[in-house]
Image (cartoon, rainbow, N blue to C red; front, side):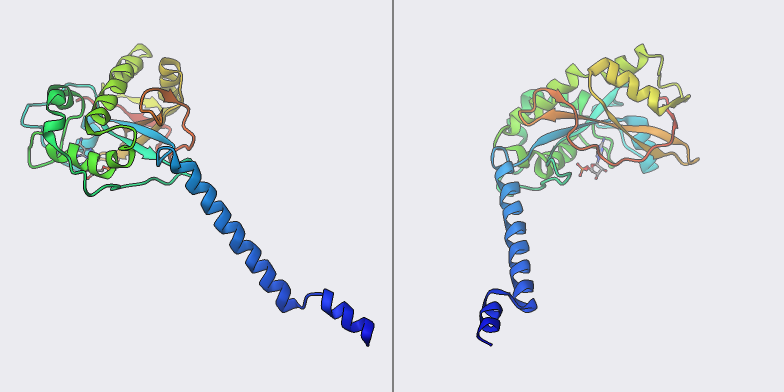
Length: 245
Ligand code: AMP
């Protein structure tokens, strides 16, 4: 009896075991969350997606679009955004309500923004709505590294470094309404930039898959292209149209 009592003392009951196990997993989850928190402490994010779009595909996706008040954008890729992201695939958004878009902080960049970060939303406007959406949703989440002016300037600078249209045309891939193999498009971008890109497609009214957006990754400083730590999940057919603009 006595021996049995001792054994009982040192052998946890199933209930105790369960409590210990759930306690352990609770601590483990807490620990993982803490580690995740610590890994984001540096910047509050890990890297950026740099997303460019092809204007006529945007117009076909939306079934309509409006050229900006400054006129029809040039037939080139334009910026959609520079989006802070975490290595686990999630992303922060709307990080600082106290930092609204302020045009006076970027006024020296307006002419470059109008050409390279063109709005296509209706009703026609000068771009302020699109830029303020991008700053407030995404830019505020990298504000510890790039203030408002630096965020837009850094994005324009990357766009200048990555001339997607030139890269694709050099590989014989042109915006001529023809269909191209998506793998050839990716290969051309890899050869031209040194980095793998993700291609996002849309459907035009006739259900043709079109080249819509191209994702590359940029390090947390907003300066250099890097290999994407997480490949965004975007759908595309194997053969896609590169529409005329
Ligand atoms: P985001 O929230 O950064 O993923 O951006 C999505 C929003 O940006 C949607 O409301 C889109 O309609 C809008 N958008 C994307 N491209 C453009 C563009 N070229 N002009 C105006 N709005 C755009």
